[in-house]
Image (cartoon, rainbow, N blue to C red; front, side, top):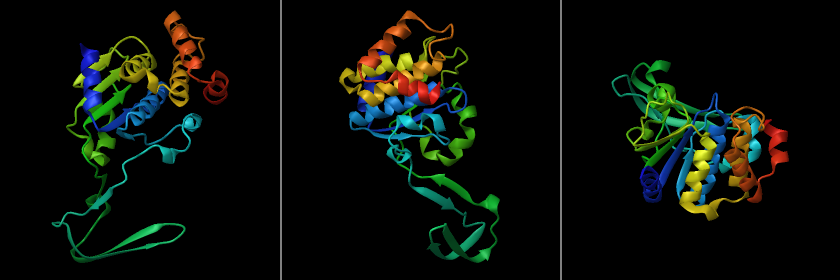
Length: 240
């Protein structure tokens, strides 16, 4: 029932944001990339919110420009702080400078807000995030357009706060959960790049299949992804 609701939520959404945990879970980012490719295949408008993309995972995408990202950046100064009468900018090879003429009041750095302004997403998918508010508190200051959207929460930690509208929390790797989800959405959408991202996630999760978390199901999933075009040697060269 939960999986059916998840598929319905994804099918009905047009604008989707993916937010993986960035610090301790490489497979959260690789799984987010796999979902990114899958949802693009379904003609969804997808934003992947990753502030610091790991150097060793860049081989999984043609370029970071390929990953769509919020582009409407806002600089805000409250009228009660200062009145701005003129704005102009200068741009050269080194930088863009924005000049403001203050008519009244004074402006300090702390008075200025910086944030992205985008269409509110129909759906947010988090991967490996245990507590949405506390882990993303600083990032949400810049991404205020994410607030109050429905959340699909994918994780494998029993400490997860179950903050989503739907919570896919189990003891499997995040990669296995995402692979199962992608198969249910559209098995034909698993192309080489998606398979490579998912196999990279399995290899990161199991330390190249060496740690006790390896199961027969993981080996079966790895074999399936290799048949879909994932190159184990290329992944080993980059992340293991």
